[in-house]
Length: 149
Image (cartoon, rainbow, N blue to C red; front, side, top):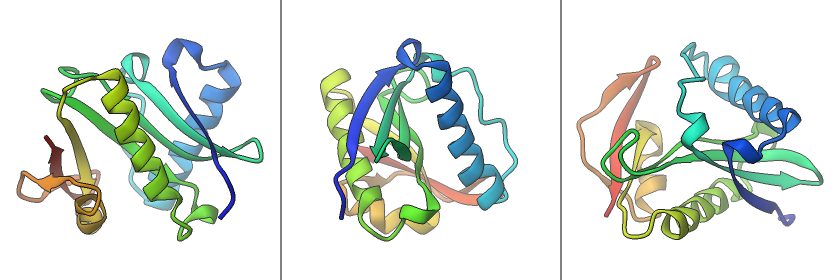
């Protein structure tokens, strides 16, 4: 597995080119690949921290961290993705480990909530998240709310 370069940046530190790349990859994965038409740009990106993994200068992993009180009582991790060509090599687990670490650094003492695709419940459980809701539909895909206290 090749080494990924990680960064965690507030919205105002994203260059226009980097923001374009992030939005392009989010659309590629969530809208095109998962056939999930939804309003991706939800006015939360501006308050988020953006966790990005670059490999050879190419964005291959991404998630955003929302501060406590913006979506949930605690912090939240969302828009979790790994580029399709990079899946199956452990990068998703590395991304989540980095996201959890950055949450602890930036939102000290806050719980972390995520709205997880139900098919990934065991993956998130292996990272320490507990299911706290019944399944619900989001963008035509079954989801569950999970919490790391």
